[in-house]
Structures are given as C-alpha cells and as structure tokens.
Length: 284
Image 1 (cartoon, one colour):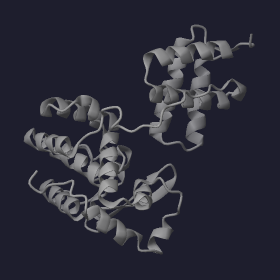
Image 2 (cartoon, helix red, strand yellow):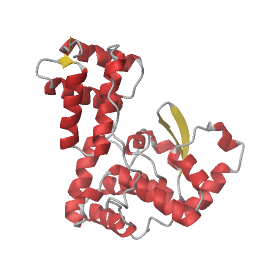
Image 3 (spheres, helix red, strand yellow):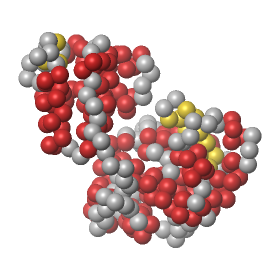
C-alpha cells in the first residue's frame, strides 16, 4: 500500500497562491480550488494515497457525467503535481467523441429565438442581447467582459482567452442591435454588459438567469446554458459555409497568431460567412 501523505487546509491555500502566481484566470482558480476542496472533504483524514484517490474517482463516476468527472480530475491532478505527487495522478475516463446533437441537448434556432423573445417580454433586455451576442459570434460567456462600448461601432472586438488574443467580427444585424442597446441604456464608456454598478456580469448569475428564462419560455432547461449557444453558432456556421478553417479561427481553436489575420483576407471572409448565417431576426 502507498505511503499516505496528509493534506491540510494550508496546502489548499498555498495551492491557490500557486495558481495566482501562475497567472491562471480567476474562474480557473475558483474551479480548481472548488474541485480540490471536494476531494479534501471526501477524504475523511485528508489522506493522499493511490488507494484513496481511486476510491474518490469511483465515487465521482457514480455521481457525475464523464465530462464532469474528467474536469474534476484535471483539477486534482494539477494539485497533485503542485504537491510533487505526480506519480499519483489519475487517468481520465475515455469519453466517446460526440456532440450535443447525440445527447439530445442541441438547441435549435427556433428555441433560441423563443428564448430571446421571452427575455424581452420579461423586461430582460440585457440578457436578450447577451444571448444574441454569444449566438451570433460564438464567443464564450467568459469573453463577454471584453465587449467595450467604444468598440461596437468598429464592428470588431478583441478578446483574450488562455493567454491568446483573437478578433471577434460582429455581423451587421448584431452590430445594429448592440448600438441600439447602447443608445437605449445611455452607455458612453466601459463594459457593454455590466451590473448597475458598472462591474463585470457574474457568469454564475448569467447561467441562473438563462435557466429561469428556459422555464418561462417552456424550452428544455437541459439545453439552455451559455456554451450551447456556442455550439449552435458552430453548427449553423458550418452548415451554411462548410468552412472548418474559418470556423476554427473564429472559435479560437487555432494556434495561428492574430497577426496572420491582417496579412490575409481573413476578416473580410469571416464577415461574408457570418452574414450568411441569419441567426438573428430584427423583429425580436
């Protein structure tokens, strides 16, 4: 049996400091800390050994979906590496390559528009325009914080994710909707999507608002979460254009530097492809 090492609250605190020094994003730090805390609470005496780790993995498998288990194991493995216990890292589960359509969680254009319409009927104008922004550009919910009032009229927004910058091109209809929102809300500077105090919108609050909206609109709540709007964008874009290279660049899956865009026809080509999608409707 492996020799046990005891895990303490101090180890957790130090791990959090390590993540900050490594310049992980606040969201990543919060998730890793939460996931490692879950193991700490599971282990009755804070023991770190292969036997206890495997027992914890089995417990996760019984309680969570494969993707969630793997996500939590990533965080735990990061912690084990920090503790210089890399030999105890756990293997992730093999996950069948699938998409939201296979699992029955694909959100349709009709359902998306129903959500937007219901948001406006309920006086949730900001939520409606956030949904439209994510669905018409493919941005992640965490990237909404990079949408600044001053950039909308240019039709191009720069976002950062995982240390990389990329360009987000706004389709004409979305640009018009955003400019209308800016005028209506009397916004002059700063974040486009923010709280009344001007602070960044909390992602967990956006998630909860979307779930509540799903109930109002009578849309399956399992389909309504921020990342599914990104899936809808990707499916629609590919269906209309069959252009995987541009889709990869737009979604930020490519490792090619942003400067390559300016040296090619990139932005104009993206713009033409984006206009073919017709996800948004001016009447909603």
